[in-house]
Each structure stands twice: as structure tokens, then as C-alpha cells.
Amino acid sequence: MSTDLIDVHAPAIDIQGLVKSYGENEVLKGIDLKVLAGEVVCIIGPSGSGKSTLLRSVNLLEVPTGGHILIEGIDVTDEDTDLDRVRQRIGMVFQSFNLFPHMTVLGNLTIAQRRVKKRGKAEAERIAREMLGRVGLAEKADAYPSHLSGGQQQRVAIARALCMNPDMMLFDEPTSALDPELVGEVLQVMRSLADEGMTMLVVTHEMGFAREVGSRLIFMDGGHILEQGDPREVLANPQHPRTQDFLSRVL
Image 1 (cartoon, rainbow, N blue to C red):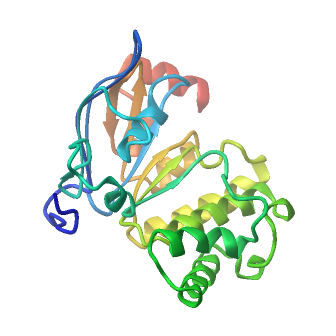
Image 2: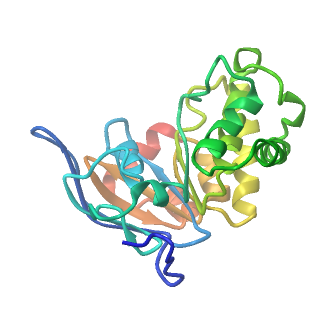
Image 3: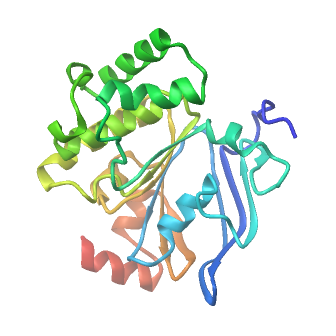
């Protein structure tokens, strides 16, 4: 199957009847979700609700037990799909920064470009420096991760994902491992990406970010999407009793 043909009319992400089980434990129980190009969809919910499993299923870091996931019209759950090619369209940022400690920031940002995109050293370094500038860390190209704050390391991780020219970004609680005073600098980078029209699916507990930046807010619990809508509406006037209970504890 060719993965070069993008269906411009298809959702960026189209999740259909997604089921994920670990043995007897069914973590996702038939999730349906469409994310349109340019949307910023934020997912909230208690620990163990299936949020991260849903996010990691989008690029098949978690292999679904059932259902289908289409990326720009391409079914990544089809065994004939060139998964590596589709994954190049999807940037992912995790809770932990996953930087190579023995490499400089520039090395971390160029290795995948050179190995996966087959870019030459000069081009890869030019793109890396450009993306470091976008996240406000142009001066840190030669630093090692151990010399950076947590917030700076997470911004490097975002820059690394952007170096691959993704069509969309997945964020799995990108600020949860950070000291509170470092959270803002990472959220500011994410805000700027949203302003530029990047399609984003964000698992987060930052309600202010969801309210101000999100196009849509989704509440998950027990492997189901229980409520979704305009972030301001959901946060101010949740309809589902479980959403009401959860927000009463976190807001």
C-alpha cells in the first residue's frame, strides 16, 4: 500500500472502535474519535482511564486488540501499511524526555534526521538549529542534556520531533515530570505550535492550557470517552456526573 497518498479530505486522525486489552484487562473499550487537521484536542481524566494508551495507539506504540486507526486516510492497523513511513508524519513527546545523554543537543536533533530522513549532516544541523530557535534554545546546541533543566530538556524533545517535519504532534503529559516553575516554558512552546496550526492530540492535566488553547476537550474514564466539547463549556459546566466529580477534585 502506498503511504505517499494523503487524503486531504480525511481527518488527521480517525479512530474507529479502538479496543486494547492486556490479558483480561480491557483498557480501551471501543473508542471512536476524529481529530481534524489544525485541531488541538486535549484529553483529561483520572490515572488509569486509558488516556496514554489511546495516545500511544495512534502511532502503534501500543498495538490495538481491535478497531482501526487511520492517519490522513491511511489505515495504520492494516498489516500492509508501511508503518515507518506513516510514523514520520507523527511527532511524539513523552513525559520523560528520552534524550541520549552521551550526545549533545545538536546530536540528539540530527540522528533521526540522518538515519530516517537520510538528510546530509549540513542540512540536518541547519534544520536542528532552526527548530532549537523555535523553542527558544538556539544557544544550547552544544550542551549535553545533563546540563539542561527539565523544562529545557522537554523543549529539546519537542524540537527533535519538529525536525522530522510532522503533520501532527502527540503529547503524553509533557509537563508532568517538571517542577512547577518550569511548566510554563513548555506550554508556551505548545501554544506557539497551536497558533501556527499544528494538529495536536494532548494528554494533559494542565486545565488552563486546555481551556485557553484546546479546540476540544475530551474526558476519559474506565476506557471510555464520557464527555467531549468546547473546553470552556466542559470545564465550566460538565454534564456527565463522572466529569463533574473529577473536575471538582482538580479545579
